[in-house]
Image: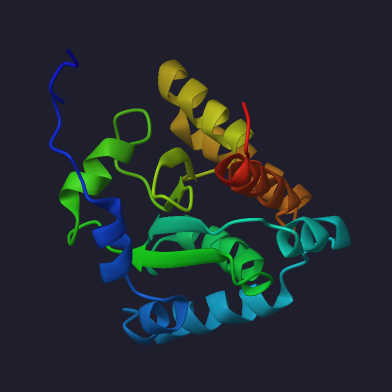
Length: 189
């Protein structure tokens, strides 16, 4: 007999259905400047031809719930990457939610015990969670964790900034997000 869940069950389809599309989310942005910068970055985002081909061949829909707020610098850097991928493929569907609107969802996706956005939660076409991404690329998350452990988050943030500068097209983020897309549509382990 299965054990009952410790955490309340969340109807992720309902959360997704109640979320905002990218355009709706931009319309309610706290900062018009931030919204305009993100949209310009989305339009300028490099999507390599191989990624376009993979997206064009997706056999099923991938749903993504993005926990994001426009005031955050990491949101401003990474939401345009996710949305540029979604722009390439109608089967990659993204909805945006705010932390305050869904604290029960956000509480499940803390970063090293702390609140950090964006968080992108990936689901199969049947709304089975297959993974999440954020708030930073994997290598940057490790550096920040080491900075916390060493008591020098400032130095860790400087290293993270150097990584961002070395990858202006966010191709590391593209690769990490595409791994989750491919996991969501796989038909065997």
